[in-house]
Length: 509
Image 1: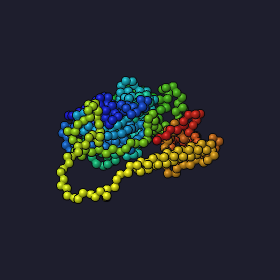
Image 2 (image 1 turned 90 degrees about the vertical axis):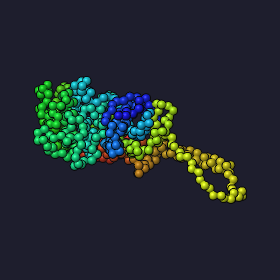
Image 3 (image 1 turned 120 degrees about the vertical axis):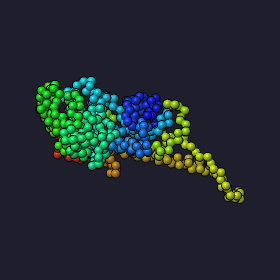
Image 4 (image 1 turned 45 degrees about the horizontal axis):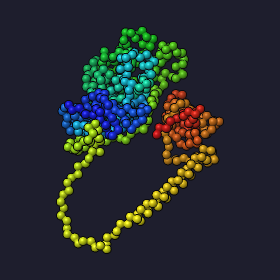
């Protein structure tokens, strides 16, 4: 087994690798500092997931290609399911470590709040806290399923928290299935949380797999056993490869126990066709416990009823999230990379550079036989005239600067008169901007506070900006943050981007 030498190195000219977080069967996880990011940025610390094919003792070309393809598929899956409650990919690259070992890497956001397994060990969650986190997981997982991604390893250890413990994100899409298939399913996931169709093992009761097709119901099985952990604080190891049939003794007398147990039992059936078929359907049942959670905390039960118990699970957006994905990676095997192990590294032993930036070996020039030719005639050689070229460049620079100043004056004049209402705002019909609402906003028929209100934009909604007039934006609502509170609402209208001097939206790019 050959481990990578990355600690105390600078990767890709910007990532200072600080410490090792963990090591799996084919990848190593490091925490690094991005020296190009502001210290106040939520991404000033990031995670480097490095593919190390040499961790496999019996590595062969076919296995290496499979590992590289799986690593690339993980990046593709993360980009396809970009969501506030799913860990984001920030970049990628290929490099050589300080021992000249080649490797590929992904740059992921760093979630310093730990995972939900650790949080449950430190302190038991209240029912309200457990449902708060589960709603976010359901929102992210439902979005992944809508994009044909099945995670296949949902468990508390793969649910990571932000530093303020307010936002939970699904991590580790390393074994995710990008498309549904009837092909045999290899054994993946943690045995305690994995459904029968994830394993070649036979089910306990019938000794045969009742229904082995991989569907989103596989993730729902793992999600239900994760919910068991978050709500009770106990491991579901007694129900490995079988449905949850009971709750821990300490919880059997809780007023919500009779409601919870049938939900978990249905979601963990051995036959995937008998489970909830969508995450939204599972959350519709589970969200009914919110009434009990409110009563436990001394809140008025009717306060919860303002939002129906069968509502769609809502995401929680943390600082630094953007729906825009970085450039798609394309990884090759070490043979295709054609690394030369004799190439010298940079003189700084703590510097790790991209393989593209390494010095190239230039082949020695081969002697060539030249034919004897007559010397050129002096009159045919045209002398270089640097003065004329220099004079042309000066003229071009003067014209360019003059044109830039004139254009700037025209643009400034237009902005002044357009904001004063003298001139109409000119918009580009071929481009638009995406934005996300920070708070609830009224949707009006015109760019005027006295115009008719034709709808509303809920917090966390995705918007496409069509036109601007000062602080007013004409938008199309792409996705409501809370669809249940915006029924029969118009999808196109005007909103005010300022409310008492504060922004009501933020640009997505």
